[in-house]
Length: 483
Image 1 (cartoon, rainbow, N blue to C red):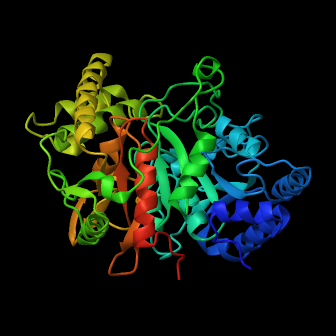
Image 2: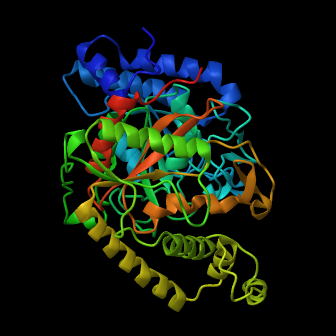
Image 3: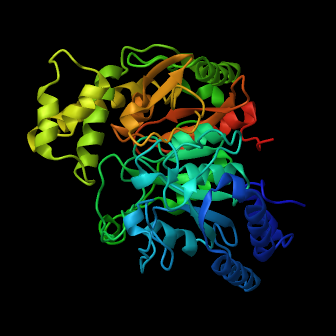
């Protein structure tokens, strides 16, 4: 039997029953990577020798009667996580030879759970793109159409899962970097509630791996089924043992409902700042129809929904002001000159992003205070609804675009071009207030490309959108391997 596209749950069951060994599963995964990854280029840093050794140890442990959540399961890890003995570059050429001495906390948790790490998956330069290409490792292609991107910045992980290169992967998300690749490649991903999963060691190369609470950014699981997402989130979730973990244990509340007919869901497919392409609207409608058929209460409008225009503006302000503080940019004086040249009437997202590059601390505090008002609005909405279904991006996967100036790139939505980074507004809907969001497959476009949607849930109630994802998977079929 071929195991490459089986779920992690199925692999765990086979290992427990003695139907397969970890060494056999790992050898099969490595053989598939060596055969197919020349075109996909998802696994940028293979670690096959150590993977085989870990698989052998897993089989020995199971023979001794040990049983851990991921014991013997082949997985991959996004390149941006520190793994002792492997390069962590974030695709940045000056750091191509940087090799950390310690594992990231999430890599340690994977290993403690018994997972077998096959290697690291490709990313864009500095994790700053909706694609996955860089000068060090080259371009990762979409398994469904090699002329298109798998998304970013966790694009290598999504492409690996869609190609059968391991059962699970871990990524990160600040601009949809878990959800967009899942949407583009037809797999599942979960952006946890902000702060739910410790991120120490998912850090730019050569920076110290400190237990810092990042704004907006999270680490999270990727898989080929919703149940596998929950399995991996249980491994990842919990505070850093160096900080809150000293005094706190994590107990996530159960899902609000177990049956589809008990869910109350708000469905959105229109944004005031950017149109939703026909293929994605059709995907949202397919999920809405499945909800109605399952007896869920579905609404298309609610006065409780926070203002989407202000939400997108706040997201861009917080995202850009935080990003430029960590990465090299033009001189502050030049940016101030460019900003001063903007018309006061220019409220486009391009203008919002430019102004955010010169935010003062006072500006950031004001934006953060408005974010808290949005969080309060979401709490009120989730008293009436259990989840919100909406797009992840306006389109399916788009063709590779390596224009070195991202500000010159455009996204084509049903034949009309829009600024490239405006497509982030849907991902930012959950990111700005720190809400959990589960990306699920929602069918195919007329061209045969995967289409996904996200299920946004209440803060720290991650099991609610995950359970809804499981129930929808039963009705819609979920993941399908590329032809």
